Length: 110
Length: 122
Image (cartoon, rainbow over all chains, first blue to last red; front, side, top):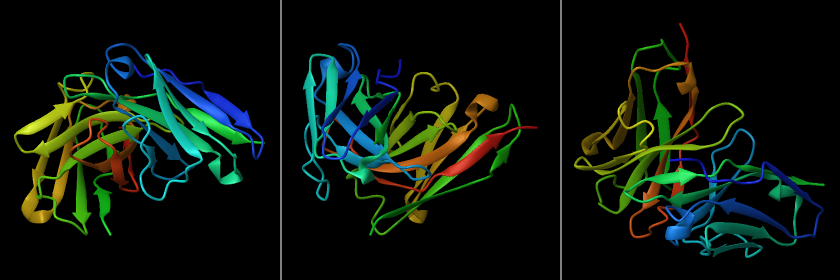
């Protein structure tokens, strides 16, 4: 079971949109619509932002949008704000009652 | 408000067993509506899913850790436990417990503890 592939870092200016990719295989991301995304600020526990590919928990701004195509899931953040600067992790079902995280992406708001 | 609190020794010697407790408050641990997970994060690195417990009879572990991991639950104390044996320095990490709602294949981890740092060193 290998970690899902995410870009190590991304950046964007306030107000812009950024998309964070999460690439797996047909055994995980590509095989199921069971991808979630987490935001983690330094020294804090992760926070659920998206689940089931594109569902937002209550309280998560609609600036956060999830999608999936084939074996790649994406988290798009529009109208980038300073508080969006954080690490982001995808998390996918990988079959046989196992789950796997992506390697994480550090998002910098310029 | 649901709260999860991890606790346990902050220092474990190599080859010994790491034992952690997650104490849950604010909701029933035995409602059958939740999965209880352990996740870890080495300093400066990414998250790693360790395993999931639904009931004492229904557990799933990361294949890479499967032979060393045991999760259990004491519903009377609202506690979930993690044991990881034969630890090495590579097991040094912040360990989190997290709750997921049953019913979604994503197993969305809605509530997390604040994490506890475990260092493996002699």
